[in-house]
Structures are given as structure tokens and as C-alpha cells.
Length: 339
Image (cartoon, rainbow, N blue to C red; front, side, top):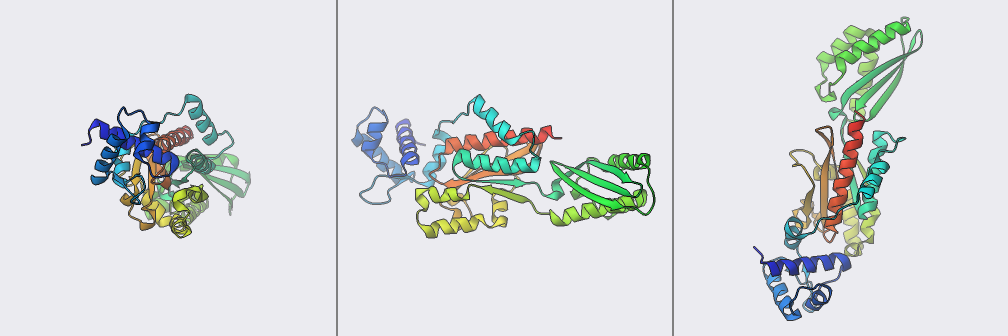
């Protein structure tokens, strides 16, 4: 464990490096931070921190910069929380849950807002169709042989199909069929559907049931995979760490790989709360100069997706952690209200 003075020096070095992106010397720390000790003492403490792996020296004549180990200790034990004001939180909520926005559009807006708040790359994974739950099926008779089928899935997906029937249906009959289908399917997930359920729907509801099954199967085929919404990709290019175009291109190419992004933000076996993955902790080699801050979002008590921010290891962790948390809560609140 680090003693109190080493903790203060390490936090001062990391705070300064996050702000300036320049190696930090003992005189800078003495001038900017009132630690109550001389530059020589600070220099000795920095040397000890380098020896134990918390700091590193890029050049012999340069100051020190944090190592991944230093950032990890900083995030876990040293950084002071960044707190959004109530007004800022309310603004985030309004941006995400505007009255004219569909839940799908809100995912786009949340991604854009998170990128703006953090000046980094933001990612949001939407639930796959297999995770969706039937909320409501509405049938509307347009005439005796034309019925509009509207399938509402939770959270926030709507599918429509106009069907032409061979037999005539009155408005009352369409309403009765609609109520019966809702009774049978409400609360069932796409994952739980199978040949038995499809056969029952077709047998009980005839050509309307067959059209509904076709709509369901089309949705399963089109939208089986989780979708990733990304924003702020070019923010990577604004960071001094990525002025080397070869390095920047490697990261941008990694961000184009959907399977990799899904693995980064997988909801499987994730603990609750905000998670931080730093530098070499990333399994993808192109991402090992980056950190990922992520959090699951919910509908009620059910996890339905993940959102996160990718930036350099020299990111402002306190603000990014707070931003990810605020946006995740706002998105969860909006989606829960839609249920």
C-alpha cells in the first residue's frame, strides 16, 4: 500500500497529466499543488512511484507520466468524484426523453450527448430482437378485407404490416382477435417463441395469425443481432496521444468492428454500476492505449443494454465516470416510463 504522501504525489501527477498531456516534473507539482514538501522530496517520491510501477518516464530528461497501474490505483482509490448539478442532470434527462423522440431515437440522442459530454467516443448497445418482449398487438380494420397489424415490442420497437384477408372481418371481430392475441402473447419474449407457439397462433387466429407470425419471423431475421450506436469517433483525432496517424487509424478500424465492440460492451455477467477498463486490461491490441468506461442500462430491474465511452488512458476519469452514470440513469428512466 502507498503511504499518504505518495498518494498525494501520485494524484497530483495524474491530475496534472490529464490536464496538460505533458510529462510532469517535481517542480510543477510543487508549484501547482500545495503538498507542504520541497521539490526534492517530491522528486524522491516520484522516483519511488516509478520504481513500484505507478509512474513511468518516457525519456531520461523528461518528467513522469502515469502507468496503467497508476491509473488503476487512481480510479479505485484516489480520484475525487465529479458531481453533475441537478440542473445538468435535468438537462440530460430532457435531451434523452424529449416528448417527440421514440426510444430508438433516444438511443441515438443519448450516444451523441455522451460523446459531447466526454469529448470521446461513445457507444450504446441496443437490445437484440431476441431480448425484446411483446407489449401490445393492435389490429385496425381499414375495410372488410384490409387489416393493419401493429406490433409493439418493449423497449421501444414498433413494426407494422398491412394484410389483405380472404374473408370479411367486422370491426368487432378484429377487436376480439386483437384482444385474444394480446392475452396470448403479452409478456412473451422473442427468445421464448418457437414452432409450438407459432403453430398455436396460426391455428387459433387463421390468416391474421399467419400474417403476425410472418411479421415476427421477419423481425427475427432482420434484427437478431444487437445494434451499436456510436458517436464522436473523430474525437479520437483531437487527442495528442493519437497524432500518430498509424495509431489513430488502428483505433478507428477497431471501432468499425461491430463484433469487437459488442464483446467490449457485453452485458453477460456484468456487475452493476460503472466499470473502468484501463489500457493493457483491454484484450484488443489496438485498444491498449485506450480506456473504456461503461455501464448497463435498465428497463425496470431488467438489464437491456450497455453504454460506454472509449478514450485515451489520459482521460478525465472522474468526469467520464459521472457522465456515463448520468446518461445510463436518464436512459433507464426514459425506457422504464415507456413500459
